[in-house]
Image (cartoon, rainbow, N blue to C red):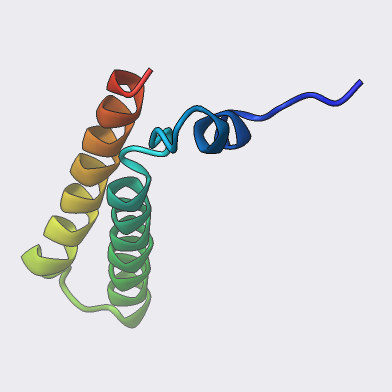
Length: 75
């Protein structure tokens, strides 16, 4: 017996978009990774952490949260 995933159901159900918020969430994850790497490299190099790097991290977390909320609203 073959089970359908939610993506397959979306394609069968008239093309309903079930991956809502995925791109925003992915962009948020990329920003979190970049911000965390910048902060860790600053600490390792003995430099002060720039506010821009902290804002990358916070902005990425915010985008992840927005993407998760949009994904829950898609159901």
